Length: 82
Image 1: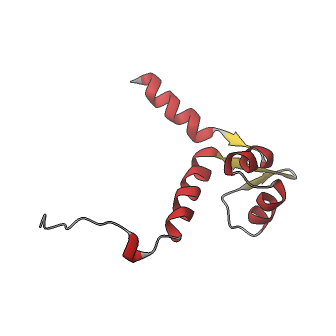
Image 2: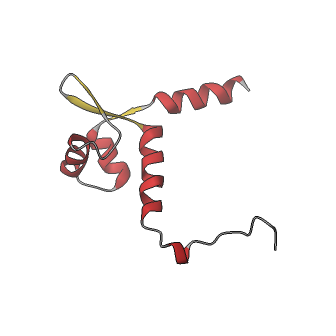
C-alpha cells in the first residue's frame, strides 16, 4: 500500500522539459513553447525554463482529445438501464 501511494506521489511530482513533452506528445519543441507561452498547455517557468508536470500533461492530452469527439459518435449508456 505504501509503495502504491509513493508511486502515485512520484508520478504526480515528475517534471518534464520542453523536449520531453514534445517527444511524449509527438510534437515539435517550438509548438510546445508556443502552447506554453499562450497558456494552452499546463506549464510553469523555473527561472527562464518551462517545466511541465507529467500528470497534468497526461490529463490535458485526454481532455484535448475529448474536444474533437462528435456528440453523435459518442457511445453513451442509458442511466435507466433500458
